[in-house]
Image 1 (cartoon, rainbow, N blue to C red):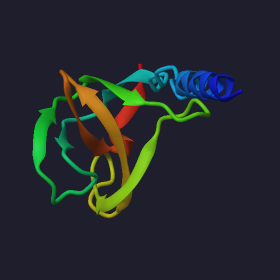
Image 2 (cartoon, helix red, strand yellow):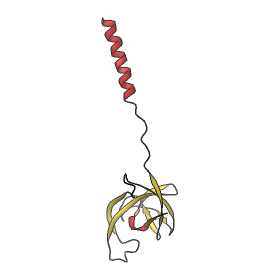
Image 3 (spheres, rainbow, N blue to C red):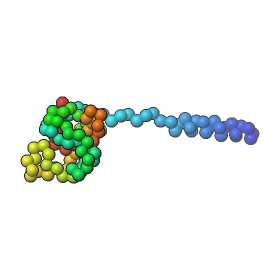
Image 4 (cartoon, rainbow, N blue to C red):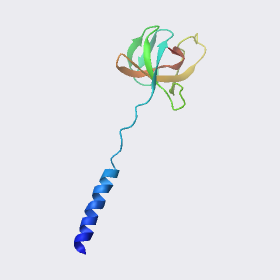
Length: 113
């Protein structure tokens, strides 16, 4: 009887270890957007963070999409980029990838391709 319990315990441990293995997570969907004017790509969604690159007007970027199919956006510091003419203060940012560099850019500066 003791041998059977030990074998059953080993079998249960083997099965439980197989159940803990999971499939790799699916990568998030992305879509290509372009910049409506030159805008900085920043390390964080704030105008005070490090500028990683300057995205030229018309640059193609990949942006992550949310589960509803819209562009995923983040709330950060206020900015007046892309048509705000200095009086509209927007605080929305998008996480994008440009030429292998991932960072944040002002949300209003992006339009879908």
